Image (cartoon, protein in one colour):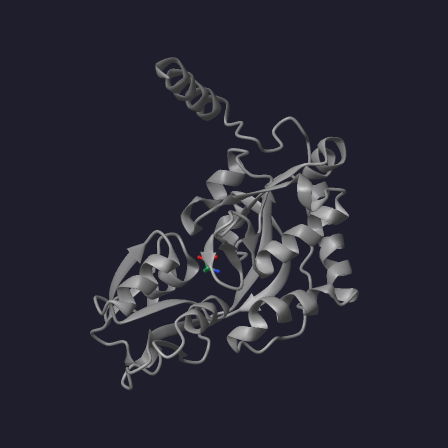
Length: 276
Ligand code: GLU
């Protein structure tokens, strides 16, 4: 028992030291890893209903999971060859850079700052920042009513950043590690609202129907991309090709409808890819 835990300690140290935690470090591109090993490690969220959610049996469901599964298949990897790994907002760049995941499909907005560290295929979805409040809160109707409110968001997210730069004077921002932690604090009455992308909030409002509601017109543009190593040009092209196919053959609309349609979120058209 002691020997085994000691080995685990050494294994963790070795993984940290080499930065090789099951990703594609031995390959120039995720395309090569997919082709050779027929396996991929994909980072997804685990607590966002409709998008990336771990179910009690340990599997993952949601629109991001559907997109990831479709893309992997186009790269030659069957669902049985995919290992889904939980990522939270703040560790996505690091997980890609360290090779802990081959790609990230996790409500991951394409931004110039993130492009310094990783690269993105997509966008495959466009969301916008909104607010989630308690259903009986009649006063908090949108960002203009945030004055003096206690707002929750997630560390490292674009919505938290926007609050810090644009609403810092009016609100008290509490940053959590995950959105579900924010949901608990709004439900419990410690905080007044959660802000992040409308499609994420719609999932929580549906999960807690009658207790939570989404308010405010979207006040940002969040283009969801599939993140991978910064220099993986082949990977980006292949993933964009896969997305193009998913948009064209109806699978994209079907997956979106099945995943987030039931939350009352209006399903939109597939966005224009921004290849670079
Ligand atoms: N799309 C935003 C972001 O990438 C918010 C959602 C999230 O934190 O995953 O930061």
